[in-house]
Image (cartoon, rainbow, N blue to C red):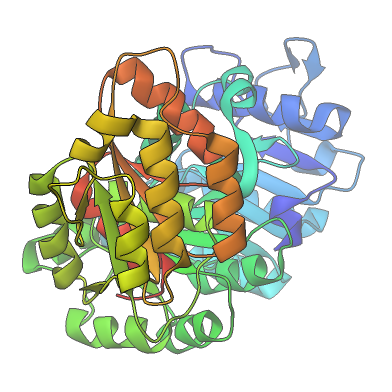
Length: 457
């Protein structure tokens, strides 16, 4: 797997000089990634933008660690045969037109696999968008040009595996445009002719740059191996498994030739293997990002304190907490007494704690600080869900550094849900997440993140 993620040299079979074609983007990305250790292959071109092209991979004089193939599907078996002759051991097929298109494509895929296995080659794909190694700035994908990637990709600790090619692109664009999201690796694995989620999971478990693994899967090829690996690690594994319904299973078959699997059986296996199963794409990203900010802890209980600016939001959160199998914490008399010190005399605090009247009297900075400190110090509280109404004001609503110190002191998960003025939300989110406090923009997803942070499903 190291040859895929950390090759010293690579060839592109199907490099294009046409700036309107994906083969050009792939050429540009790989050239920027590997410099003079990159070898484009196109029998009809002498060079692309001054970089010499070889007519075949066999014409390249240097050793090749990785070959990326992006040519019409019928020509791919011959290209793999040439890779075998060259001694290449890792091949990514980004071309489509294999198992997903029917019997003819399936026969092509079978032939590719036979050639690869005889030569000891590992195949990645086909029908995929390749991979990114963010820490090394390696981009082996045909989506857009690498100048945009390099400016916006943030090295971090989340590995993202997406079976669908264009969906992985969608994830990336969303991640880069919405909020800071530190990534270690991004993988689009397509039809999984050979390399599958178990190979990647095994690699990421040993990868020091990866601390959280997030996956969108339409099928699980080697279930026993996959669940064994997930159960063996303390690194959180988050999975969005599609194809739960008959309609979804049918769509997955036509998309990446993924066979149906019994969802109830999978649900049990996820639970036994401590895999965090999510139900939506935004949830996958929120949970993975939050886990990378706030390390998960296995707890025997998940008692949540809710600090809110709205009684209604507190009620909704209470229902969501119940739905996730968690419970509202019973605040101790000492905690109630400490919160009462910043409350109006006519109001007694309870969980959910409605802070709005207190903020009217003392202002948000003092009320947030003293209330948060009180509930974090309560031994009957395992996690905190904090609601913020972001106002269009220049001054902050928090002493951010003091809040971060509280989290470090008590080591309890804190998730923030924020609503209100758009610019204030952006600024406050940046300040909080800079201090490893995750922020979400939907109540239900916030509770789901809390459940994940306590390894409750």
